[in-house]
Each structure stands twice: as structure tokens, then as C-alpha cells.
Amino acid sequence: MKTIAALSFALLAAAELSAATIYVDNVKGNDANDGSKERPVASIEKGLTLLKRSDRLEVAPNNGKPYRRPYPGVNGKSLDVKVGGTPEQPLVLNGNGAVISGLSAVPADRWEKAGDGVYALPFWPMSNLYKHYHKQDYWLPASRIFFVDGEPAVNCLSRAEMEKTPGSFWWSRKERKLFFKLPAGKPLEALTVELPANAGFYVLADHVRIENFTVILSWNDGFDAASDPRGVLYRNCVAIDNCGQGFSCHGSSIVLYEDCVAVRCASSGSCDVHWSNSSYARCVFLNNIFEGAVAANDNSAHTYSSCLVVHNEPFEQIWQNNYSRMFFDNCVIIGNGGTIPLMFLRHGSASFRQCTLLNAGILNRGEADNRGTLAIEHSLIGNMGTALMDIPAGMEKRVMLSGNLYFGSKGFRVAGKLLSPGENPGRFDVNSRWYDGKLSGRLESELPQPVRQKNASGEMRRVGAALPESVWKNYEKYRKVKTSPAGVTFLPQQKNN
Image 1 (cartoon, helix red, strand yellow):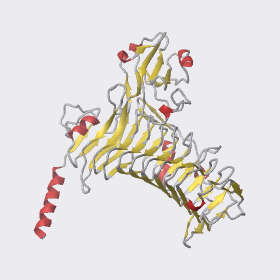
Image 2 (cartoon, helix red, strand yellow; image 1 turned 90 degrees about the vertical axis):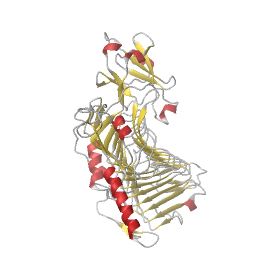
Image 3 (tube, one colour; image 1 turned 180 degrees about the vertical axis):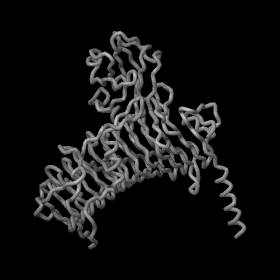
Image 4 (tube, one colour; image 1 turned 120 degrees about the vertical axis):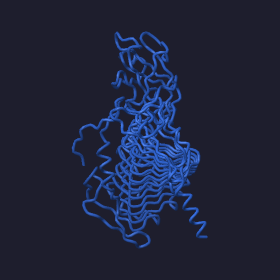
């Protein structure tokens, strides 16, 4: 037995020694090189082709030049990671802070003439729900993704507006085309027109660790996994201004996201589907501009631990669809007030433990035939408009509330009847109470003093979330950020709670 163990250790050590490091540098490198430290390749996609099992890819910081790829045509290309590693020695891709841009300059001969000074180009970004959203036949106004000579161009809401606005764009969902009005006196050949045409990472292999990258202006998502990879870790990865999601898991992938940020993506901050299983730890989902901020679909299962979900529009902050399962632990989730609920529930389950849930039209929106369950324990819940939550008839037995603190709402709506705070909402709520004070602190989401409550089992626990400082720092860092062909610019911050 000792001999076998020693042999196994020797084989493992030999494998570790044989693992190579491939270097990428888009300033000093050349794709004709061998990828050594002295002779780095220039592109990440070339570096990926040189990797073998359990190797390492070291990407040089941008040096003022984001990593970009040529224009591929209508369907953007992702950075597919097809080689993995082992549990003991995963394949590692370290960006060292590098920015990957999905922007590509469109060659002049790809445009077709479509009117007086107007040119058209097929454009069908992977924006999931939005590109099938029949109410709007234009690109999202808050998403600045079209550039002329390095500057963001006007994104018009109609063809008529575009034709009156030299140097502007209009995207027609119906026609699946982007239209561009030439600036006065400028031929198309004299301009550099850039738009999202390539995408971020897709992991397709087991035991892969990707860290310290920022993906901006992606034609699709930022950081994904597909098929059935196991042991995937994204760490310190940031997605900004993507046409798709910030993060997404597909198939039966199992993925962990740590200290990641999704900002102003044109779909969800995260959207996980099929039978995938994901965990998000200390992540920030901020200012994403379509779909639910964090969304789960199909039979997928997801955990959010110490995450901040805030300012995402125009729908709910949380989408729990079909038979998916979502568990939130120590998270702050803040709606946008008005009439939009904080979350959508549809079958499956949503559970919250020591969370802070604030500022929406109501806590939950679900279908009348919803067969799902909702559990909330030791959470701070308030400012939910006309009622704290709406529990359809027949769902009372599938709602479990315990040890919570409620404020700023008129009560529960159960089977259509509004129950005021003084009334007993039923057996589904145990040891919760109403609070008539005010919140303070960051985003006005914190109690002036810690509060502890007893749950249904008699345990005393803190009420509400207490996010790590690293989460708040990422919120402050990325709440005002700008992307362009030059990369990422952090705008001056105003003092904010």
C-alpha cells in the first residue's frame, strides 16, 4: 500500500511539474510566438489553443489597450475554454486586471446602402428576452454600445429620428438590422464604426478557474458555463455593458462566482437555466437594464451569499421561474419603488435567510396557480407599497415566515384580504414583529442598532443582512463607470450613503 501511495504521489507531482504556463500580451506579443514568457502570444484566443490539461494562462494587463477580436459577422464568437484540469490542479486563466472588449470595427464593405446617407447592417445581439420584446423596436436607450471614431453615438428610437440625426444609429428588432446615418460630409470609408460583435468566456470543461478579468460590450454574455462542466470558478470577474447577461450557466454546469460584479448589462446580471447549479458569493448586481436582476429558470438551483442586488430595471430584482430553486443568505435586495414587485415567483422555491428586502411595489408577484414555496427567516422587510406581500388563496400552506422584522407597509394580503399589522396573518408567520423606526446607513438599508429575533425553533439570530466591506467597495467603485473603445473609465464619485 505504501508503494502504491508513493507511486501515486510521484505521478501527481510529475503531472504538476509538467503543467505549462502560456503568456499573452496584446502589446508585446505576436500570435506567431510560442507563448513563453519571453515570446508571448498577442491574443487570448490563440493562448487558449496552446493550453493542455491543468496548464495556466497568464494575461498581461491592458497597458491602455483592451483585448479585442476582428469583426466575425452577424454571430459573435465567444472565448471557449475546452480544456480543463483536475480538482488538485485546475486549469487557471489569470487576467491580472485585463479588459476584454466585445467591440469590433465593422469593415465598410459589410454595410449596405439603405437610403440617402443611410447604411444598414445585420445585427442580432444575444439579448434573450429583449430581442423578442415586441413593445419596443429600438435598442435600449440606457445601453450605449455604438461608437463612431471612438465616441458613443446617439441611439435613436425610430428610423425617422435617425434620419434627422447625422452620426446616429437605430436598431430595428423587426428587421434584425442596425441603421446608421452618416455624419455630414463624411464617407463611410473614412469612419471607424464599432459595435459589440464578440463575446466573453464559455467554459466547457471540468475544473477551470478564471480570475481577474473584465468583459465589456460583449455581443452576448460575460462569463458563462455550458454543457456539463464541474468545478468551475469565476473570481473577481466584472461584466459591464454587455448585450446579454453578466453571468450565465447552462446545461448541468456547476459554477461558483466569487467577488464578481455585473453592471448595466442589457439582460439579467445573472440568468441560469436548465439543470445548472450556481453559487454567487459577495457579488454585486447593479444597474442592469432588462429582465430580472438575478434570474433562475427550468430545474436549476442557485445560492446567493452576501450579495448586493440594487437599482436594476425595469422589472423585478428576482425572477424565480418554472421549477428552479433560489436561496439567498445575508443579501441586500432593493427594488426601485413604484409598483414593480421585488420578485417574481413561479413554482419552484425561493428562500431568504438574514436578508434585507426593501423598496418595491410588493414583495412578491406570482401566478394564481403558483405551486411554489416561499420561506423567509430573520429578514428585514419593508417599504413594499400597498401590502408587504400577496399570498394567493391556497398558497398559505406553502409560505413560511419566521423571526422577521417588518416595516413601512400596511400588512399582508392573503387570499385577496388585507390583514393589518395587528391581525394574525395565520400559521405561516411565527415570532415576527413590526418595526416603526427608520433605516439609515448605506443605501438606507441598515438598522440603527442590531436586532435579534427568535425563530420558529427558538434560536436567536441577527435580523437583516450585514454585507462584507468588499461588497460595498465594489458597489462604490462600479456604480459610476463608463465603457468605450478605449476600455473602462471610472467617473468621479459623489458622496453616497
